[in-house]
Amino acid sequence: MTIRVLLADDQNLIRAGFRVLINAAPDLEVVGEAATGREAVELARSTRADVVLMDIRMPELDGLAATREITADEDLAGVRVLILTTFEIDEYVFKALRAGASGFLGKGVEPVELLAAIRTVAGGEALLSPKATQGLIARFMASPEDRPAATTAQLDALTGREREVLGLVAMGLSNDDIAERLYVSTSTAKTHVNRAMTKLGARDRAQLVVIAYQTGLARAPQ
Image (tube, rainbow, N blue to C red; front, top):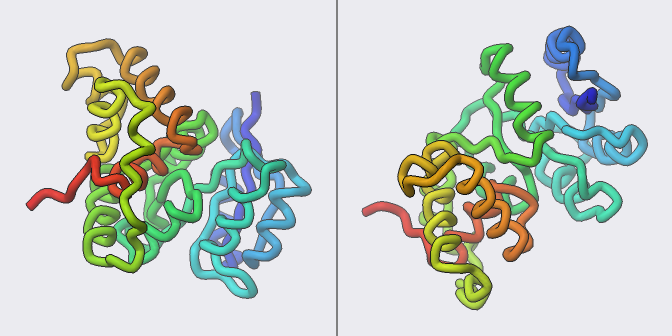
């Protein structure tokens, strides 16, 4: 099955480079290109792309607002947004996750990592490295205005093991890492993560991190 990719970046050269690389992969295809955030939203609806590779700084509608519109549209529930950043630890990381982004990618990423990232996000997983997670935590803890009141009642639906897994996800651990930490299989770890997402209404792993800190389940290390 071919993964359909929409490129959203106001720089023609960057889009051209990504297009050549992505189209060279047998399982990936660029189905549209947007130079503005508004165009990205419109093309997401018309092309039914699986993954939108979204730059943050764009004219008309920035990447955050465009991401928010895409993820809020019930007709686009299957569309994943992968944010492009100049720096992995970016002032917009937390806000982008709140907007519904499934992960982050630095523009200096290696070609093989870009392709792997698109496949990861298209498969329903989040691309949130420990480095990006640390940036998210730092931003979250330093910005009380970005922090809603903790809603611990959200966690009542989780089992004890699911809460434990949620805490590990918030640390930036992968399913393999969680499996090793809890002495279970990777598939079992993935099942716990998926159940937590379903119960909490999270689109993906990235939103689980946000929920873990909103509810106070996870706290930044001292």
